[in-house]
Image 1 (cartoon, one colour):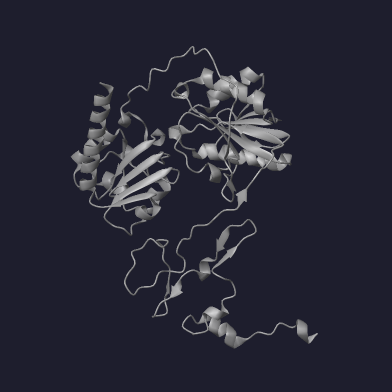
Image 2 (cartoon, rainbow, N blue to C red):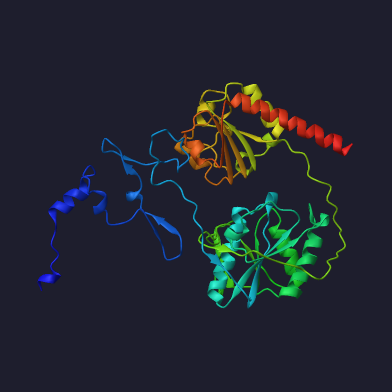
Length: 413
């Protein structure tokens, strides 16, 4: 039939191609933003931006953080805060217990993977399951809701601070009696997860699965022989999970309802925590360092940089330019052509941010940039940027660090 024939409109196609035509925007079929089925705002990259007076499409690549120019026009692609849909579990049928490492009082990437695996198990089991996170001592995390925590059990006491495996396992045994979790999930890490998991397995009489990286309701695949072999076994109740075992939660918010443990926890401590042993930060390999102060071409006073790293207790790193110029040794080079780092805090001093360097710091949790160029790639990558001369910033950091140490010594005395 004639109604089924698709007839082209050459004039409409020409207007759609001609960005200078006044009716060009009306011929764009897809909107700049639309809400997807999961509730997230999906952005059409082809519709982001605006046409300038010379017919060139302009896009604000600083996501709305660029300085506002009088009479100027901000891009239509400026970043907007997205409100994720709220996931609620009113009356849980069962719990999946997660014991995160909480290194430095915050959820690590490994912890978020474990929380994602917990929700993956709930999706396979079905019903109204809730993820119960057990956190010991003080914490600084502010995004439990976006990480997938439905219920939060915060066990706060001075006894939980530091190394206290006996007391923590005794508390988890009380959680077992009170909440009877369907599964126990812990990160298989050197921070605390592996030891706590093994002790808890002995306490509960369970046989755990270690280095589990593909977990199903019936079967689990674990890494073995240094990651060169896989072992398939029946999914146990207690799992020690490897990194990247599951995708972290990123499309929903969760209630994070506080729950309490009514029973009192007591245990005889056979190990006494004497505090951390002082270690030279520069003796730590870059790939294992948690706090890195890295220098680039913008550093002019290298003696001041070394002093700042010593006072702050940071491991020294460098960009390729600083290494090629002879200011730093080759083994200090950070990037795809040097060492890939996974620091919790990475401070880039005077580094513009070449693509190889940005690749090398891709797994860092927090990146802080100190630079005079507000438009450099490192500033765009950083979670916090200081636009100032590096010498002035380092001098102030040294002063503040020394004042803090003096205050701590006076308080201790």
